[in-house]
Image (cartoon, rainbow, N blue to C red; front, side):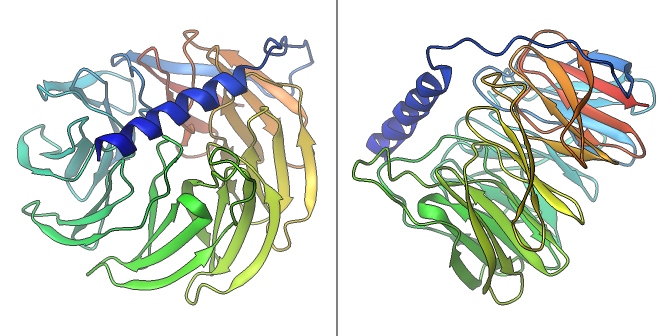
Length: 373
C-alpha cells in the first residue's frame, strides 16, 4: 500500500515537471471583449494546499471547505457566511451536498457527514484519502478513495453498503477524478483507460469498457488514466483519458459509439452539440458530440496550466495558473472575455448557477461568484 502511494506521488511530480517545460506560459494578449465578467461577491474560505477544492450548491447556498479543515455555509445571494465549523481534521477534496447532507473527505481516508445546520451526522473510514467530492443519490453516498476504490455508504448511518475494488497499475495520475451518478447508476473512469457502470443500490457491475489502450514501452508512456467525471447525457456515457482518447458508449449496455485520440488531465465538459477539453499544453478543443469530429481548437493560452472547463450558456469558462478567468465562444473558440481573481491557480471547473452566473474556488482560498453579460 505504501509503495503504491509513493509511486502515485512521484508520477504526479513528474507530470508537473514535464508540463512546466522550458518555455514560460504564454503572455496574455489584448483583445476586444465581447462579454463582460463582473464579481458579484467574494468570500474567504482558506487555502487548498496541494488539493483541489470546489464548492457544492444546495437550496441556493454554497458549501465550501479548505485543507485545514474549515467547512462553511455561504448565502448564495450575497456571499455572507451563515456558519463556519472546524472539522479538526485535514481535508483533501471538494464538498458534496444533497438531500440535507454536507459531505467532505479527509487526508486520512475518512468521510464526514454534516447536516445543513452544521451539526455532525456521522463519520466513516474508507481505504485512503478522498480526493474528489462524495456524491449522494438514492440514499447512498458514493465515495472514491485515492487508491481507486469506490464505496457506497448508507446516507443515514455511514455504514458501508458495498465496495468496488479495481485492479491498479504501478503508476497512476494523482488527480481528483470523480464519479457521475445518473438514473441509479455510478459511472467512473479508472487507470489503464477503463470505465465502468455500477448499480448505485448495491455496487453490481453493469458493464466495463475500454476508453483507451495503454501504449509505449515504459511505465510512464503507458499511463492512460481516465480523468474527470464521465459525462452522461442523452443515452451516452463519455470520458477522456490522459495520453489516450475520448470514448463515448451506450450508457445502458457499454457498447462503443465512437472514439478519437485525445489527452487531458482535467476531464470533459459537454453540451447538446459538443464536448470540450483542455490538453496538457493548455490547448482548448471542441469536438462534435455525435461523431467526435474536430470543431475547433484554441492555443492562445498555451502553457498557462488551465483548469477544467465549464459550459455557461453559449460560452466556455476556464481558469488558469495565475487566477485569470477566460471566456471562449462555444461556436468558434474565440477568446471573448477575461477577468482576474486573487492570483491563485484555478484548477477545478467553475460551477454554473442559473443564467450567466457561476462560482469558482481558487487555490488561494477565495470563493468568487461571477456574472457574465
